[in-house]
Image 1 (cartoon, rainbow, N blue to C red):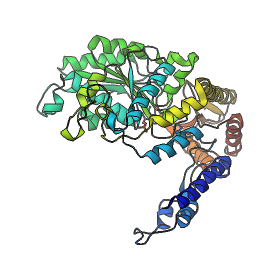
Image 2 (cartoon, protein in one colour):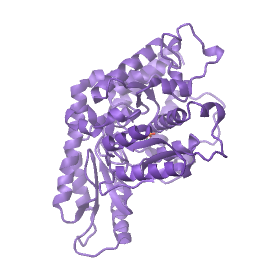
Image 3 (cartoon, protein in one colour):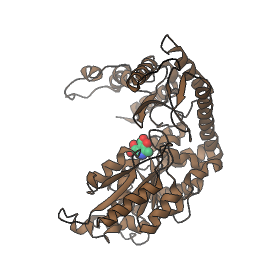
Image 4 (cartoon, helix red, strand yellow):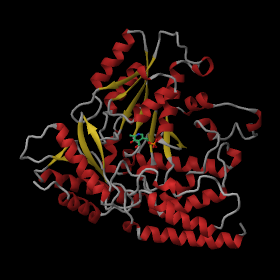
Length: 475
Ligand code: PLP
């Protein structure tokens, strides 16, 4: 592509993006297509001849876009957010243009050094103890896998990397997490070779947070059976209900038994940039590692997962491999982030974080996050006041778990599930808002999470109004 053509399409695409952002509310939040519909409109083989950019971009608008769910729509209340912002998008242009690999310091010194700086900024912003060092991973799933691998190595004196986990060994390594933990913990346990049978799901209380006494009981039982408790993964903000595992009590237990404590704060961790929310990390000094995703709630587009650990040596001892072709003269004086995680190649993700933090400033970020939390509280108050609704979990941050439960009937659980599922589907089919569901202690629950960059009161009010208007007739 000659540079004139590149400029022409580059400008056109930036214009299109700006218009898209301005008019995003005209798109249905949830893609209104059936499985296979988009694929059927696409050729089954790659083009033999070059195609014009006009045609490609046209197909993007005509075929691809209708099959997209619009995560940046301010009425996106589903799952957890994966928000973005203009400075983040601009930085991604540059990252793509530089097309650099950040695997070792030499492959792009600025990428490594900026990553060190922005991770230190984040550490300070969250109030993490000074002893923590940060590295950017692609996702929280990868971060948790890294933590599990480090825990496995530390517990076995860094011998498993060499010898492997032996099937015949009676001394099993055990991992603990709550029954409400994210599926990435189980996935990591499987990948890291612990085996699903060696993952203990610790019961939770009425608030859906891990019960520390149950954790200690499970640890003691495993020790009595001759097993080796290896890692506890605590959640600060579970996926279903943003429940907060009590870090301090859990940390004290881990400390006593010399167990690796990994804290998964994938979405909720962002809230700790607010002084009034720092309590969610009370006890974090006990953690060996901690993850939160700026790509969820810190206006930095996917992917960008911030992984912090207390002892970086455990990370490098777990992952370091030194092939001749990657050795450089600077190795002894620099960080080579390829040894801080799983992949060798690394995108220059620090750039977008740097753009975002500088663009908003800490105060600007705090203002947005605080506004989301306040809106969730307001929505919670509406649910509480309306006798037709039931609040299903404590609102700890920006997620409200609730369900429609008409007071006049004695509905069995299955009937409530059916009614609420229908209500959710109806709302999502409207294209005007998008919520998702979960189950808490077996009960079907609607989740409304407020964290999209531009969600304002009017959107939350509209969600509430639509909810009212969509209730079954008899209410
Ligand atoms: N942990 C928690 C608590 C989550 O809610 C999620 C995703 O929503 C994850 C981990 C996985 O995040 P990622 O997609 O970055 O792997």
